[in-house]
Length: 186
Image (cartoon, rainbow, N blue to C red; front, side):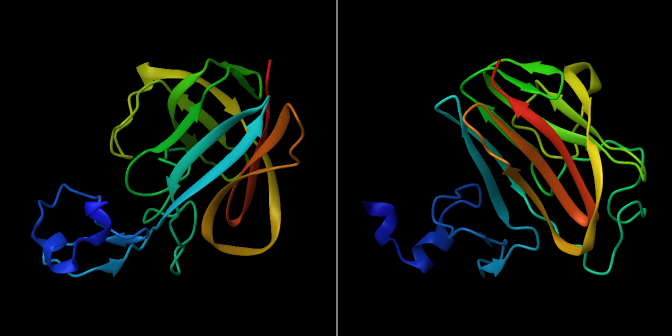
């Protein structure tokens, strides 16, 4: 395929909006040099009911900052649950995320963290930059279960765990927080 054999110099000459030439985890700054992204792309997948559910996000690092501080994730404020563009959830089948029924489709995941409980927000709006949030587009909100990690986690992660045929736990971990919710097929 042509794009696999294109040289770095030729790739640099392409329009900045073209991302097909970029290696995973690399950004293409305006000056054309490739540098690792401070918050690289990541994906969490799970197969439930024979179908694959996918969450795509960018994983930020603490870098000597703390959750709840003004420089990273202020408490009681809607957060993009990652970095860069909005965190995307795609499901080909309906799901229950906690008590919320999520029809098959594409969504954006936000959270509202606090020191004692986090809310998971599922938005019907998709394709926006992560800091663009419109509450009127919410499908719904679900309270997450909070656990304290035994040691601090530098890089934020989203994962599916305790996977069974028709259920799993969705975990969001960062610093000393482990926030989770049950995901099931109806």
